[in-house]
Length: 301
Image (cartoon, rainbow, N blue to C red; front, side, top):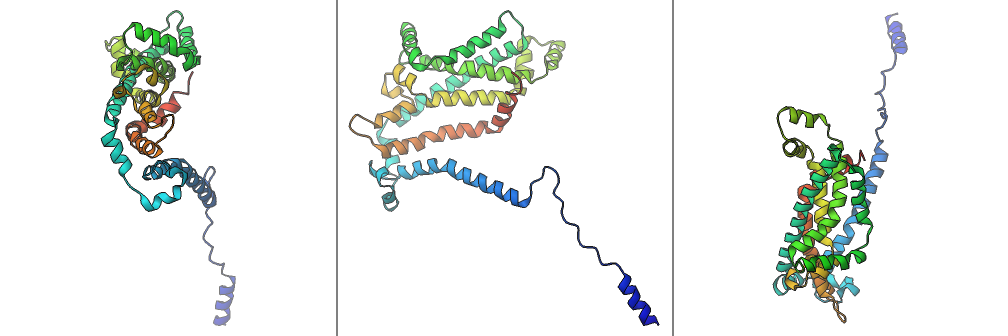
């Protein structure tokens, strides 16, 4: 009797519930989807890194025509190209010129664009809207149209073949864009901060320097990065206004390896790799603020 009762109870006992399946929450990707996303990102990263890796690979070839037969570079890799560039060219003169021009353009351009953007964002003076559109119109003229009048102006000011002249020319390119960028970023900063500064007795410039600028670091980083790259890679103005080969910037100095009848592509590749180091270092210092500055500066027009 007891045995039958035990068997009946065991038969009627409910089965142990299985572990609940993991439910994918709304907005959460499944493991398969994440695997696909990571695969796409890895493939895109390889595509982005391939030109850089290929340039480094070509720079290790000892002959100027090795780019025609890249497979043969592997067995004769050498650092002689880098040694030649550093010891037998004006590379360090180009480095000095590039740093002077790029850092000067960055400093002057960011200061002017930041003050301009803040003034248009906070102050309502007659014609402030038209002023911003005038800055935008200046970006519509091609380099070929501006070259002759700029050369005439710099010649009258005796700024041909001078760092200051080239910096001022680059500022005419970077300031209009950066002013628009900074104006959009300053629009995202509450106006109450300016009012609080005035209540505390700060002047408008004191409010701008002590309260607004610390909050605008991401926007300043984007403006500085744009100004730096513009001056770093520009060729036409630098080749026209800088006459001394010791005052060439990197972009112009790189062209000295190409003549009418010859092109030393191995030396060009090695120089290009060395040139990328300062730009990569500058990007490393400002990259923390780049994404924030780019997205915030575009939220308001």
